[in-house]
Length: 115
Length: 113
Image (tube, rainbow over all chains, first blue to last red; front, side):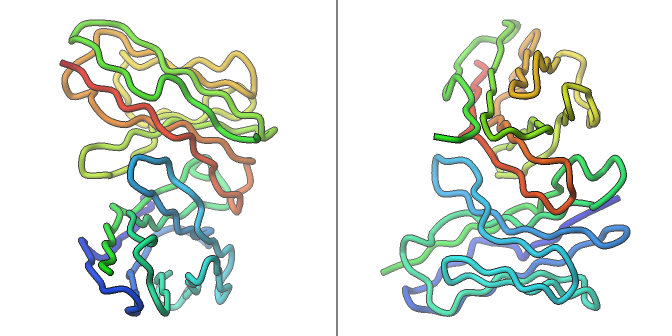
């Protein structure tokens, strides 16, 4: 079945540090890929997405590139802020078939940014 | 505001009770979902509905019964609550296409004592 593997957290960085959160996936065909962010006590918000190979999703300084050859979708940000502290989830969604009707998540990575 | 809204935000109840969580979306989406987030933040699909029709039921106990009276609503009823049901439950909606993201509600924190 489909699966998403994220790097284990927690990740602790100082403000203005470079962030990478690794994400790899296993799926049949060519899924769409997403990063979601969950701030403390809140629901999940879409951060960015990519729907085909070599697409780059970007938002709020975060970027991720859909790499079909390595089945990866790593999240990066050049300079993190304290306000980026949250749990980040990588997810995939199939483009066809019954499994199209769900988003499969990784286990989440807790990021803490210290001033 | 356009959104996915679920009520209540917090639900504290005793083992054996029956409770319901309501969800409504005004985004015009055809597909709605229930997810369960455990204490380690892991998110697992429970149900998905498309145009009021059940599409996915991911080995959820029969004590959980979703009901979709129309495309904009997907409620979750839980019978005979158990300690292990304690979790945060998220409702979400989307268009059915695979490249469409899910839009999530703010969650219902269920605590069973």
